[in-house]
Image 1 (cartoon, rainbow, N blue to C red):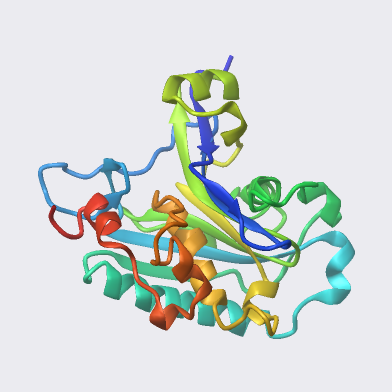
Image 2: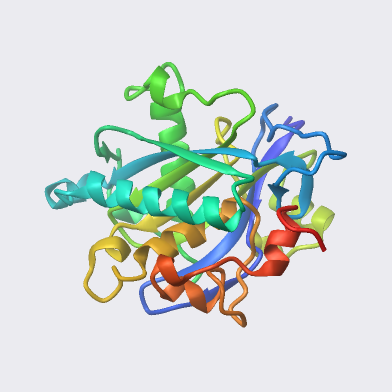
Amino acid sequence: MILNSRYFWIIGAALVSVMFGTALYYFYISSEKNGFVSDVDEIRPHLYGFPEVDISKTRIKAVYAVPKNKTDFVYADWKSVLEEALGKSKKFHGIQFRGKSALNYDVYPDPVFLLNEAPFYDSNETNFGNPRALINIGEEIEKRIFQEDGDLYSGEFSEFKTGEYSVLTILYEGVGAAGGIIQESEFETPEEIAASIGLDMRHIFVVDIKSVDGFSLLSRSFLTEQETKFYGESLFYHEFAHVLGFPDQYDRYDIMGAGRLKPIEQAYLDRHLLQGVGVIMQ
């Protein structure tokens, strides 16, 4: 019997193009792990909607994942592309959070050649950002890289420092854009979890990932293709921001709305979102 489940759920989603849609999800899984807790009497940046979860120190573990049937299509300069997106995200995050949240990152040194072909990871419908790819790849990386008996295990890469909010970010040689928080629940099924938090069951996913507090995924093409690369880093941060609890808000102009389709140098986080994570006062 599952006594604790870790789950991930969709806050909102919308079709951005025929290629992808983006959404905030929450995931649940059987696990004793949870995000570390801060002293709520201290003013620290925290997870959006969850003031008990400190995000003043956040670390991304970034992986380039390639399906088995796409090994001949590895993007030659993937590491530079990924590191540039991470570097710009770090700078953007530091500015927007007024220096109150430190974002650091590590990149797995080699492409991760997945055990299955793309259809295993992908869903038929990608209007919601392809959460199936995020889940299936995330669970595989959990077993192969973060667990000591994994064939790609790296103790140095898998380690998080004490007090860090832990994130897995996947640059995917495929289709998709999604991200969300992983949380625990006393319930076992999506139906029970959805009922307990008042959400549509279709927005709930139970996952088997114990090593991180949240995860995100973005198609490599958004960072390299001519028609999207000028705003690719904004999409990259947009999906990461879902791991901090930020919802989509397509009626606004910040990076969680229309600003995700602008260069990250022109983007910003809306004031009410920063209030919601304790960076600025009401």
